Length: 167
Image (cartoon, rainbow, N blue to C red):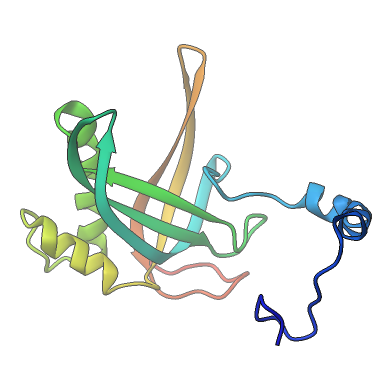
């Protein structure tokens, strides 16, 4: 088996590879990256696809814990596109707003979770991968910058693409 583990794959000289790559550049050009992508303005249905957690260093300042929830859209023009919401335990107003939104998500995910326990909140999310939500994406402009926010409004029953969710 080749070095990279792909059966039938072969190493080729750079010029051969670049020629083949140029022939497929239209495909690469058309591909979209989900890095920092947010849905267009409007209502969306999405499921919790994953949860990352860790410590975030900010410009040499003390680290703070964070939870990043990855969601995948179900249905519509953005079907199967993913976006992430970052919840940081930062000091000040930024942290207060972020944690307020996290508490809303956790309450929708599992109403029995103690709203004052950050560990329980994180565990509630990681144990509910696949939960389906309805939310709203809002784009606002302030001082020449566009801010894109997704608000999780409700947990819904599982849906198939093309179906309407039920609350």
